[in-house]
Figure 1 (cartoon, one colour):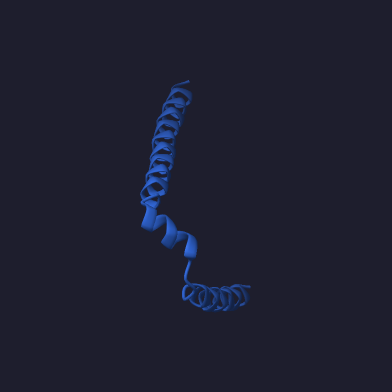
Figure 2 (cartoon, helix red, strand yellow):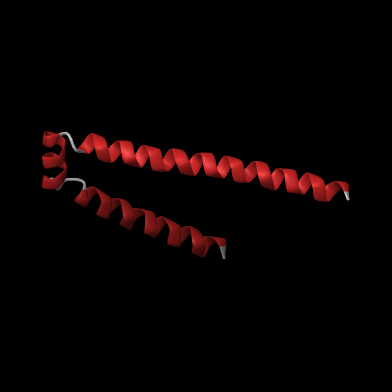
Length: 75
């Protein structure tokens, strides 16, 4: 069972990385245009705010779940 999964994971990783390397060599005109106009920084800032918000949300959710687990454990 593990031998089969190991072979499948190896095959998947080889195929995945070969495809990624072929896509990495193409140039993206949209990114160059956005970088030239300074809009890429706006995109990066928006993504940073979204990820920061998700991070804060997950921390708050973890605290609430921990509090509920403690309350349930006392009963």
